[in-house]
Image 1 (tube, rainbow, N blue to C red):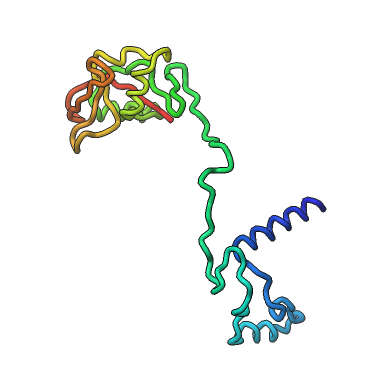
Image 2 (cartoon, rainbow, N blue to C red):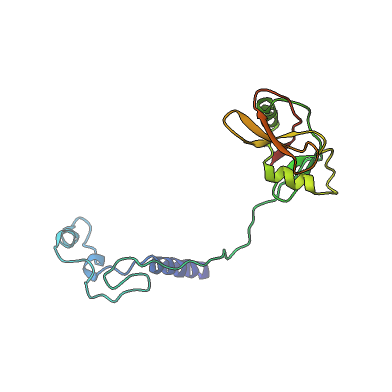
Length: 186
């Protein structure tokens, strides 16, 4: 019984929040089964269903239109997005995982295909840079040779990083030239 009352109260609060009010008595009093004349008369009546001088509700203006209701700036619940659980060959950086070691030299197109075949993708510049500048995560040789990144530099070239430092950047054609590849996953 208590659950029913709580649910009824919640439903009533939701209806009030949306601006629903009680219907006029002539619409609530249903006619006996088989006699729809009272409902038909009320529906075809030229009278308004709601009196024009009805008191406004908190979410309705005096003219009956809906008012914009302010919403809180913050969510009342914590972010429940699960952090990725990385396999042993990948390092976790909170919101993404990255391969600890590169997978060899491939063209950008082949590198993207390789990552997709493993259920992964090429890493973004931000992900790659975060992993490169971190220590203690087991990352192997992120500098010394360029590695492909997800972002394109133009219609026919893609970005790459890591020739000598984490900040070393360049681009190369997506179908020519082979460079090391690391894959990421969220």
